[in-house]
Image 1 (cartoon, rainbow, N blue to C red):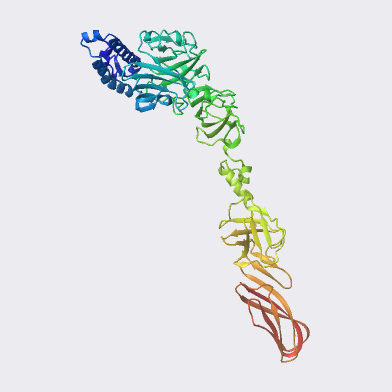
Image 2 (cartoon, rainbow, N blue to C red):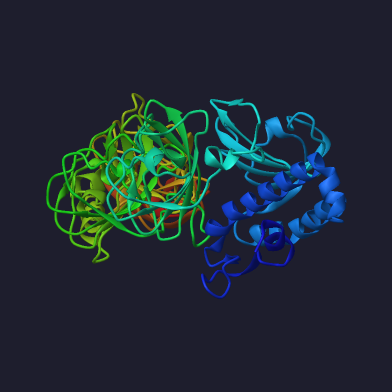
Length: 606
């Protein structure tokens, strides 16, 4: 079957490849085999067209129309290209500048497109690009008018001159040719394969493609891998996409470009299963032995099982900032050593792992890492993430959990709600709690060792949140309600601080005249007054002012007379009148005789 017949009879199709039953199939990996052959057939037909134009009499004698031949090729190119697109070589929209093309796939070049081969109009372009960096790439141009095929490549951002592949003898040097096989080795001499279409067999890790036979004037090799092996990235000698090692699978394809001096760049890598070439954090797990430095970035995956028991102090410096997350699993017990810069661990402390524990590590650059999360296989939090009893009591550690025991210890200590009064004034109470509250909340309670006895209404200021009036049963504090050196309890009601106290009495002033204020609001006051009579059948009284004014009123009065001098004749009767919350008048009503007497009084009220 001729090249023209293969292009025009459906030999190349989108069905699965089968060596015997469908050798032109592009499916099931057939595109790897048939794409170069398809290009070769295009070139052969184009070459035939050239020869036909040169030998026009022979063509006419054979009654062959060059125009018809070209029409047949063009008509059949569409289905072939569509078949290629089905298997990872998508068609693109038309383009007007081939020099700026930074995508891979099939494109249509307009008749005025910049960068097309000289003398050609429109055509189809198969492009392989390294993306937005536009440093490397390769292009094949199938000219619509002439049917010629051209190729060129880009080195360090500069496109090289177009080379026509459809000239006589082109396939002896510049075409891919028939596929040859090379066995994998540390240095696999790709240039010695005898073809630019190469199958690599075996499982040996490849660190170089060598320099033997490779030419910078024709640098492209299409490589197919027969199985799993590792391509080792090197920043100069073997530059791989993403700057990472690649583990191949059967049927994977790479387009390698020789840069000279034994240096190679992988311009394109296609997975046989169609998946993108990425370091997938949810891909296949790889294992690495623990060491002082476990270089995560050097691994072929970011899902890593760490074996062994060696203490780890670093996770290496070869990770890429573009792919900074790694999921780790530990196969046994080892120590992760906290460092405030290079290995930041949760809780700021070392972590001893156990079998099945896992972690997520973020690369910060410069060899520095942060472990974002650490999960115990048994579901428990790591010890380094738990606050100690001292930390729980202090309440100042924001990134640690508190155990029930730690919480109980903190509550029992009461340190978060206790403070000494730091005020210099008797009627102002100032305290600082640790940790500092963000705001006053209704129900908030504090214990304060008061400094100074108040002389009247007082205020309480907590952590600079404002001086708030202290109330006692809804009223301002009376003098002496706060005692120097005495611990008092205050509860915030949303507007005022309310003074509470134990033992019933919350304030008192003891003496011959004094008072007691009880926790339930009852106020008890007492005193004495001297009353002199002026004779039999007369009365005398004195005004009494209570030490405290009752907020509501006086409820009870008790009087007792003690004779100081004189004689009581027919008797004496004590009395009070003009009773108010602030005081009363106390008097004696003498029946006969004369005297002076002391009247002791006791009142109670709210």
